[in-house]
Each structure stands twice: as structure tokens, then as C-alpha cells.
Amino acid sequence: MEIALVLFAALLHATWNGLLKHSKNRLLSLSFNRLVGVVLGIALITLLPPITPKAWPYLFIASAIHIVYFFSLLGAYKHGDFSQVYPISRGVAPVIILLVGGLWGTDSLGLYESVGVIIISLGIILLAGRLRGTDKRALIYAAITAVCIAGYTFASGLGVRQTSTFIIYAAWLETLSGSSFIIISAIRYRRQIEWQHIRFETVKWDMLSGVLATGGFAVALWAMSIIPIATVAALRETSVVFAALIGWLFLGERYGVKRVFAALLVFIGIVTLLLGRKLMS
Image 1 (cartoon, helix red, strand yellow):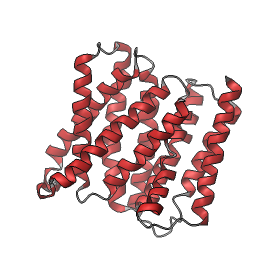
Image 2 (spheres, rainbow, N blue to C red):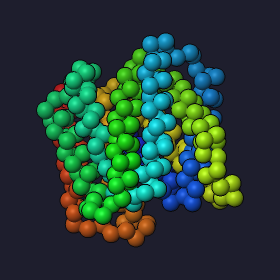
Image 3 (cartoon, rainbow, N blue to C red):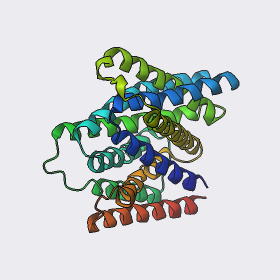
């Protein structure tokens, strides 16, 4: 059940990133996106019990990394194509988490699960296609984004296990990271915010992307509280396959043999993960 829900969260992630990439003003769109998370987070905080003190260090670290992630994501989308920078940033992160988790000793992955994570990551990276001629700035931002994804995922995976329920951690993370991003954007990048783009037709999509982003990451946090962090990370990053399918079905983008093979690799990786989970249960 948890694997199916994480795959659904991956679909949500691909959808809101696609909406962000095609926005006329990504900084403004991401600000509205995060505003949704802040509002939902504050509403839940007022209803839920206080967060466990042991979770605070992980919460602060994850929030700080999230802020860097938001700005690096905007940089990657500014200088690179969605179909290239998205797979790179999402595909590298699970391998980093697998290595760090193994060295840290937080999760015990069996052979099948480890192989599954690596296969999924390879398939995701292949979806990026050829990198020749790609703006170096896009690759740098994509690499920074990948490290940030690994960082906040690992920190949140540890932090959520210190709380009585994942929803408490999720509410505080959305509130802290989202409000910080909005404040920094309003102060540091206020000249880049083109207020003329604020229309109900566009804001409603930004708000929808915020709901998708908040809900999708909440599902990931729930999953990380019960199964290995690297497993969740690998399954969550299958969002690039959904992104490729969305581009093919709705945006008229090419979906060649190489992408089909890459998607097949991701599928094989998921099956390998499922086999590993069955053998360990």
C-alpha cells in the first residue's frame, strides 16, 4: 500500500513541477505554491499537539535545505529544459541517500532493494537525454538541486521518526520552509516579482500546484516513517517517468526509443524493490 501511495505522490510531484516550469513568472508561482503549504501548515499546527523536541534539529536542517532547493530549482528551470534538468536532479538524489543512509546506519537495505534503487536512478538519469550543448548553469543548478533533495529527504526521514505522527512534522516543515522562502523572495527578489501576472486564471493553478506539492510530500513523509528512506526516495523520483508521459500525451513532446528503455528500467527497478520488500517481510 505504501509503495502505491508513494508512486501516486510521484505523479503529483511531476504535475506541480510541470505547472511551475510553464509559468510566466516562476518566482511568483512558487511563492503562491508555498503560501498554500504555509496556510495548511498553520491550520494543522493549531489543531495538533506540540512537536517533539527531538525533532527540532532535523526540522531546522530540512527547512534550511528546502529554501536552497527552491531557489536552485528556479535556477535550473530558468537555464535548462524541463526534460533534462528534472531527471538529473531527481535521479541522482536516491543514490546519494542510499550511500549516506548506509554509512550513517539509519536504514538496512537488502540486496534487492539496493539494486532496485540503483536501477531506478539509472533509468531516471537516462530520461534526461543528451547533455551536449546544455547550458552549464542548468547542470550546476540541477546538481545543487539533487544534493538538496537528498539532504532534506534524509533529514526529514530522520525527523519524522522522532514525532508521534508524520502530520505534525509535515505541518511544521511546510510552515517554516514556506514562510522563509516567501519572506526572502519578497525582500531579496522583489524586483523579479511581476505583479501584472497576478490573475485568477494563473493564481488558481499556482494554488493547485501548492496543494499537490504539500499533499505529495506529506505522503512521502508518512512512508519514510515506516519504510527505508532510500526506498521512498527512489520511488518518489519515478515522477520523471510521469513527467515524460505528461509531455508526450499532453504537450506533444517526443517519446523516443531511449525514453521507452529508460522508463522500462524504472519499472524493473520498482519490481526489484517490491521483490526485496516481500523477501524482507
